[in-house]
Image 1 (cartoon, rainbow, N blue to C red):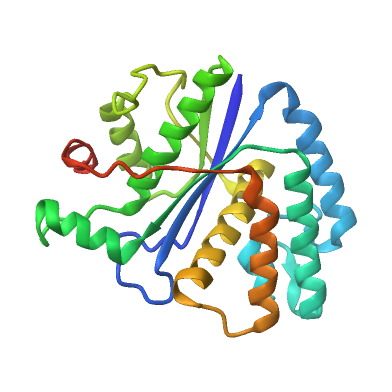
Image 2 (image 1 turned 90 degrees about the vertical axis):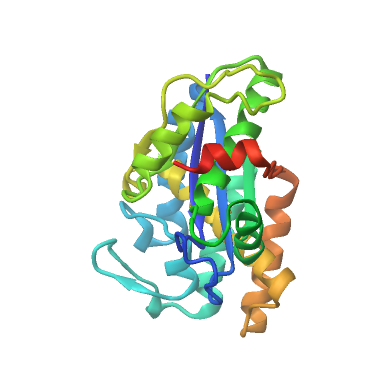
Length: 259
């Protein structure tokens, strides 16, 4: 059985005109359940080798990238140089790509999404693009499971304001929007605290760099040349493993997204 762990970057809910975060990236990594313990244990080992601050703490890419301090998460990346912080992140990316996880990603331009939604249903109703992203990566994941002749489960970072909507949407979808009309995903979505799961944290890293890359590509968003090149380099490492998800935004899907 396969397990997919997903996390997002650039989440602003229904604030679709946020100039600081114009894109939403929802990303899932999948692995065979028989590899779960070995990879999780190795990640804990590698975290301690990469940086002492990561021992028994949550990896959150934006905190390292922005050189943040978090007493709650147990680290302070302000004490490192920019070069050192970026090297920590590169080592984490290298760990992820070494396992050849399929990386399912949906990237949504929020402004374009708003215009499309308005065209279908007008300006009065707002639909969180996270729901569309979830639909897209779930569809791609299901197709992957069918190809591999496996069943699978989905685990999401626990975003409390979205759990109700995702649960309702999951029941309504029943994956009938899939071309195959076959559902290899068992159980409902399982929600996990990212601080307690290594694979949710790995998905966070992937989602962060995919989002950063497309913000640079589409909006040239990066004030620091060193950070800009770093983001491009990290994306290029991830790119061979990324399965980009189509966005089949039509009348039928819009109706399903109207929770």
